[in-house]
Length: 256
Ligand SMILES: [Zn+2]
Image 1: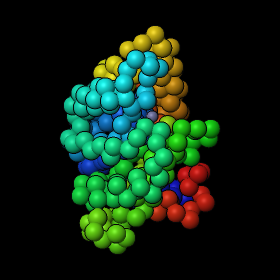
Image 2: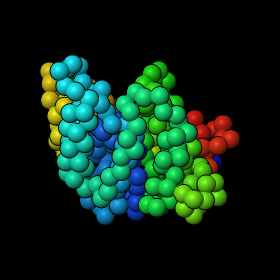
Image 3: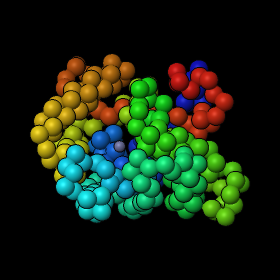
Image 4: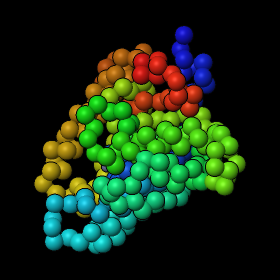
């Protein structure tokens, strides 16, 4: 039994509106820029939510947190425009701060109920060895908010809005590979708009790593779908897509 099919999980090209929630101002691009641009070009409404201000995302101690917050905001807005993002929200939590997962979940709830997306995209908080608190707190808060949004919990945040599905990027358990061959260069362009993060001597190695990873995921895609013809090179992004029902009391979700 294909549980995703049973639960009505939609293919990406059928989804009309998404919210992409990122811990830091560039995570959506690293995990999913190709898919985001593709969806936006196909007419899907795309919103970004950025949980933290990214104030510590530098090794340069001469850059003040206030300056970096402003710089990263501009980079995020520029990259968002390039990708076709319709609206951006920032929650303003301190990068690496002591905020709670619950506080993020409660801040997300009114946005989900206002924007009414069909799908929410975020980092996979169940990535083994993920040690960054902003990442695991964000992913778990998003999953909790997606569950809560469909119920009458906190009516002051708006009427219930049930969502169809969640797509986690940066996952060790992908079940969906999206062909972004036509969007690979655009993904790199979007990443490089985050100059404070990627315009440095590490970019060459990082871009090679990302290309290698995307090519491996493309090979996975080819091995699953026989309509991809003879093996050839391409790029894909990988996601763990779960129906909302699979976010609670669903032991098989890991293997779905
Ligand atoms: Zn991050």
